[in-house]
Amino acid sequence: MKKETIFYILAFFVVFIAVTGAISFSGSNNRLENFHQVKIEEGDSLWSLAEQFHENANITKQEFVEWVQDKNNIHSSTIKPGDLVVVPLDKEEFYQMEQIASE
Image 1: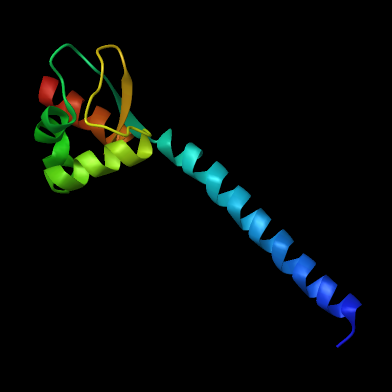
Image 2: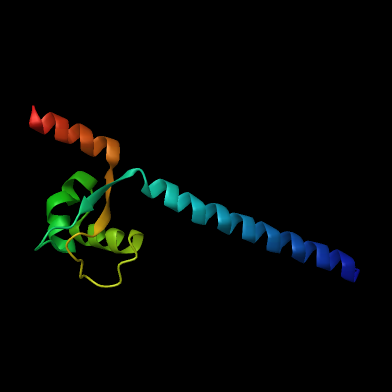
């Protein structure tokens, strides 16, 4: 095989990987916009949020905490009052549940 052919094949794979990575990265931010945000109050913790919301998200408390840490780039279990945290609840479904509960 000629050196040019090998170069073109390698270039194709590098471009393919770069485009796939760019699409994956930009897609995850757009998807987070579809989830409900919670404003952290004094005394809140990731585990108290899990206790409050995990059943609506249809996941365990452990999975809830791990999801919140991963999607919000939280590297500890400490959150501060005033922080906004995305939780694994579809925004539209959450608002529908609130409306039904308030009626």
